[in-house]
Length: 219
View 1 (spheres, rainbow, N blue to C red):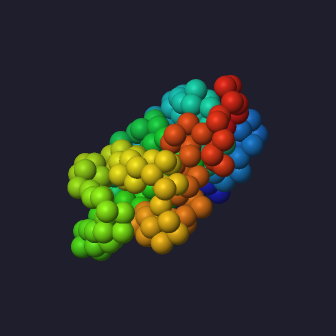
View 2 (view 1 turned 120 degrees about the horizontal axis):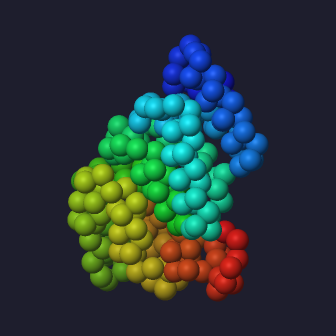
């Protein structure tokens, strides 16, 4: 926990020592690494200021968001802990907003880091339009990335990602593609075909493998 806090905050002081204690308790409770827990507390403090107690309250909010969405809490918290660069890049001004984006990413079977990489690929304007045009020709229908680019430019990382999945026609559209069309779709998103299929299944409310999700099933 100390190492994670020092990564953002430098030399330890009394407030950071309190954070380290709370971070160690969170690490044990959520079964995440002590370093990730420390990063969470230091990151929250860096964005919002306050004390160890206010940082913990914000992180509890993120924890409850993940619980309410029925996605793995530890995975969401670790995703937030390792996404500090996104604060400056996409304008997240509090840890709850970053946590909400991480929850949405988990629901789609991806991560903040992967959504950011796809966003970078989509915002490479010329190459992204060329990839979309090639897929449009192969499918015989238009793949329009304009809306996704607008959302990403406005800082809506998860909205842009969802728009890209929608442009592909969902899992039904993906399943109708041939091998080469699937390869081109995955290249446009910057992920593997297997990852894309998993994410489209989850977006349709199915399991990762395309089966109907049982009610009340754990994520």
